[in-house]
Length: 376
Image 1: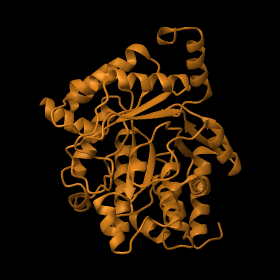
Image 2 (image 1 turned 90 degrees about the horizontal axis):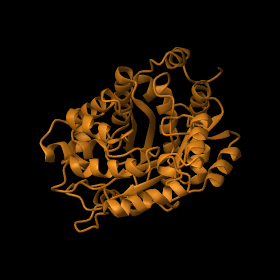
Image 3 (image 1 turned 180 degrees about the horizontal axis):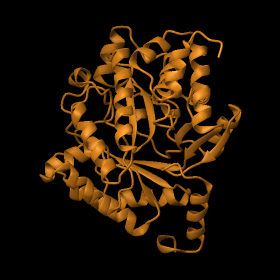
Image 4 (image 1 turned 45 degrees about the horizontal axis):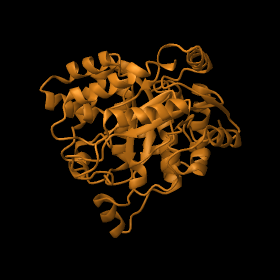
């Protein structure tokens, strides 16, 4: 490889042993050299296939006792969806051939684990084959404290109720210095890591996210990725890594930044983060996901040449990013996603939450047509 990237760095990356110093060096090489290297590793990990999932987001309330300075979604008096209202949204998702529902909401002051179990059990009773990808580590941590039970027990009960996987959100930046500034009431780095590891040990895989572009340093972004890598080396329970650029609109943290002349991260910086995450996580986390909601469709499409192999979901309803100023829509059709992927010279493939492919999807659809269980 004729590039400005040192051969020993390239060798370490191929072995899954990239260092923090490697990542800092990579951020200084010409961008398209970085993108080319990340794209080579993407090809080794995932080939030319770009995946997506047909899913629906359901936010059951915007009411929250949290004090996160980056949040534009929280309200003091937001509506709390009933199980019946949640089920109506699940039914709409099922009619749209969704295979996954992603359910999250604000932290309610007196709501314990029974509330979350009730949602999961209601869905599974009517739609046993719908994958429930729900409840952040913060929600589980909060519910366990309200219910006065250990996190391990809370996860065991959620698994028994039918929870399939969890979104690895509430990670923000895994640095206690940063968390003290942007989300002081949220669980600390070690607590987030503990919940995620316990979820994996309970048989609940998770994603992993990183919200960057506010008060963190480049070193703290890299440390975050290395923490994710360490978790994966121990548990192998992370399905994908999702870098999420901070949206600075309609929230106190972003308003302060904009008064200081700092706005959203530049697109080139976003693409470099995706590329570096591919390199640092190579051999450990195979799937790097770009958020078309955060990046916009065109930049998300270009990210497919910067280490990304997954474009997330169709969503149907996306409230949190929209409230923070995202203007790229709340949903996307399968046809448009596939058009984007074809336009990048890649091969689109619908997946399940756990990255299963056509066989699992065909099996589910066959059971649905045959009138099995909830699909009668």
